[in-house]
Structure formats: structure tokens, C-alpha cells
Length: 178
Image 1 (tube, rainbow, N blue to C red):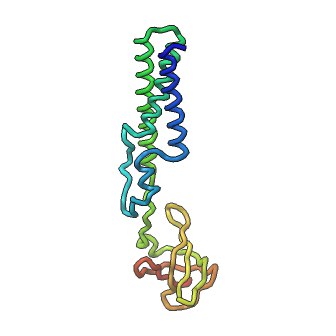
Image 2 (tube, helix red, strand yellow; image 1 turned 90 degrees about the vertical axis):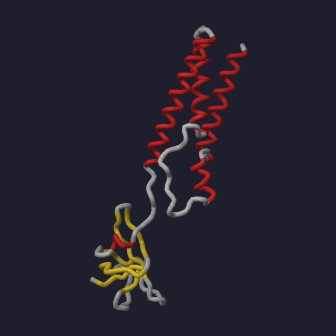
Image 3 (tube, helix red, strand yellow; image 1 turned 180 degrees about the vertical axis):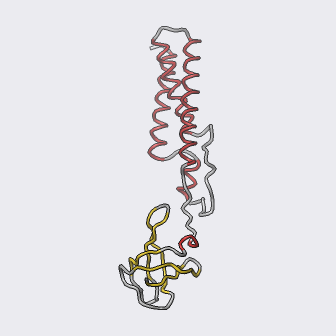
């Protein structure tokens, strides 16, 4: 086996193993921030991974190994192998970066503003406790949510009661039976 074929094979192997480990364990800085808890509730993701992220680099290496190796087996010279390998790597790396840029932009914030629920209706899922609090299920744009509530007139709420949200105290919703 000629030395160039070994080099292409090493690039292919490193790229494939790197992409697989990135898929299984995460590999970009944003994944580490989420895993170690260094991002807070108010932090936002900038919507784009770095062009030099590990996934992009491993995609480049994989495509370079495949492109260069294919040209080697096609009996092309070293210049053609390098050009095709480089172009395949740049194209695949750019495509990988673009895909992840789109996916990162699709991430949404999970912050909920309880002001948005005032005036809406809901149903009680957990009746009034000894502390006077209950849980209400409200339909939001991100799907049904269960939030803590209190009956505005200190009436007892039971499961299934239909209520209207009339206000809030902090994050605690004030509800009235319908």
C-alpha cells in the first residue's frame, strides 16, 4: 500500500471516529456549556457553531480521505488527489457547518412569561393542597403546561374544575372557578 493511500485512510478513519464520537458524546463548545450547567436561564445561543468546530473539522477530514482515496484508485496524480480531496473536504465541511447553523437557530427559549396566561382558561390537574395552592393546565404555543395557581377567592379547587386565570402574584397564577 502506497504512503498516500495510508494517509487518506488515516484521514477517513479519524474523521469517521470523530464524527461518531461527536454524535454520541457531543463535541462542540455549546454542548459542553449545556452539559456542565454554565449556561443560565437568560443566556441565549448565538445561533451558529464555529466554522472550526470539531464536527466541521471531522467532516472535512472524512471527505478529504474519501475524495483523495477515490482519485488515488482512479490512477490520478498526486496533484489531482489533493485538489479533489481538498474540494470534497471544504464542500462537506461547509455543508456540515450550514446544517448545524440551521439546527442551532431552531433552538427555542424555554422561558415562560406568566403574564401571557392572564385571561385564558384552564383545568385543574391537582386540587387545592393544605397550603392553598393547586395546579392548572393551560394550553400555550409550545403545548400544554401545568403551572402553580391559587383560587382568587380562597375556594377549594378539585381535579377537573374549569377555571379562568384572572391575574398573578409573582409566578403564581390567580384563578377563578367558571
